[in-house]
Image (cartoon, rainbow, N blue to C red):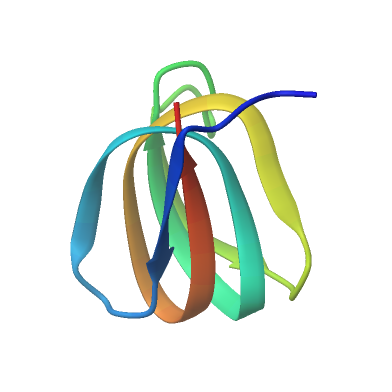
Length: 77
């Protein structure tokens, strides 16, 4: 089991930065992420990802999270 020392619930459309190891979707969301070890077509910016409630992105180092809609909880590493 991975230990996450803190988390932030994100409900707004501001950009949230830090080092996050997991993003869990609390309500359907559209998310743009910047990650150190996750790419979309070779780019570290992953845009417009639609996440369904209860879905997760994990085992990555995410450095920026911006929501267009929905609610997520981001776990810090």
